[in-house]
Image (tube, helix red, strand yellow):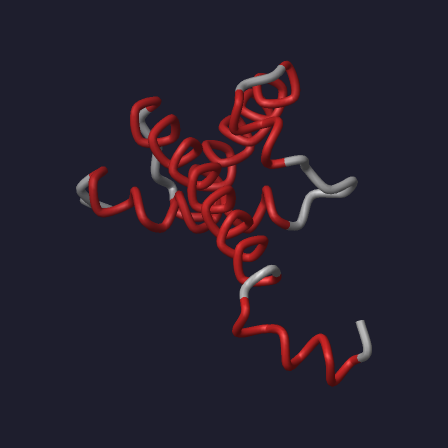
Length: 103
């Protein structure tokens, strides 16, 4: 399989994003985004898991640079999504929904 590593970056990022989002217990993205021991552990586990997944499923050996970039893009993507969600919950646009739900 002759795939350019840059072509894999979005796919690996998406895969890692799903892994982070579905982890139990949930991950405090605010703390992780600031850099913590949890981030280091998550990085070690998920980058290893991603490399193993791509090798066993597609026969592709991911470069450390691709996995590294994908991991931090996934964290940033989830963090940004979380921030946007928090902003929208407190926005005036959602006021009518809160009133409707009696919140």
